[in-house]
Amino acid sequence: MNKFFFISFIIVFLFKTQTVFSNNLIYDVNNIEVSGKINNNLDKKKLIKSAIQKAFISFINKYLLKVDAVSLYTTKINTIEDLVFAYQIVENKKKNEKVNILTVNIKFDQKKISNFLAQKKISYADIENISLTLLPILIKDKSIYTLSENYFYNNWTNTEKKIVNINDILISYNLALENIEDIEYINSNKDNLELIDPEKLTSFNNVENYALLLIYFSENKFKAFVKTSIENQKIDRSFDLKIYPENETKTYEEAISTLKEEINQIWKSQNLIDASTPSFLDLFLEVREIKDYLKLRSIFNSLDVIENYSVLEMTNKHIKVRLKYKGKVNKLRDKLLKNKINIKIIDNVWKATIN
Image (cartoon, rainbow, N blue to C red):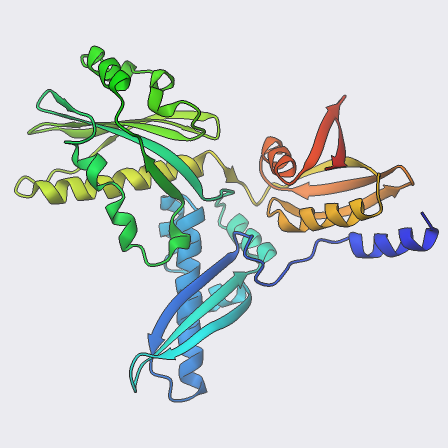
């Protein structure tokens, strides 16, 4: 490899760049719709402000714990606008002669968002949309309802149809199929359902993410016990649910919304990143081909957990890169592996090769 290539590469490799509307960063909030009259440029600016504010609420609802998101609902629009890296009007159509509907994509500035959350001492969740297999069991007046006669099984996915923006859905649910072995196992433990081991259920065989939901309903008590396994992390929690004595349907509908939100909170809480405390890691890339450099750079630029990076050393055989990253080091390793960077850790030294 010639010296000129090394020098040129170091210049382009030193700093992480941000791609506009890349669609793979959590800072992109797309397809935000706002409507109103547009008689002049000022009206258009007002609608764009409304889209930016709506995108900010969508962002914090998706990636922050509920208590933290709520605390930011009153953030002033001037503050929110300062967090925007770019916006793009995707569509401008007329609903009628007086009303325009704008569809807008908004990209928030990664560094500004991180600093904003750090100042507020708020962590965000580094998560992706996942698929989860659900088995809801309803226990009503000491009778067990597994699937076909279970309101929760028959209506769990109905609320998803009411969500306008599919990007707001963190978890897509697959309902477990009725299985005779599982029903027998559940019935054999009907006096101690909380002791059921989800891994013994056939419905969860070869399933990466699942949730067993036990819902207890009686005249004076309505609560749920959930056992989850999401990306090999197991968490059990219990929740009290609200009863509307004169309206059973409303009771169940609100319970489904509450339980979905609680499962979302579990998923977020397992993947929180403290933006105020980044860490550093030195990684050695084994050089096999010239294009390995560019591949590595492209992958680093696509990962939100990597704040920036720099080349410390370069030879014909390896490149030593220092990463500044956020979150848990295991999460960083998993993301690199997912992007086809093989990692070997020998004596606490990270050695990488590109697939």
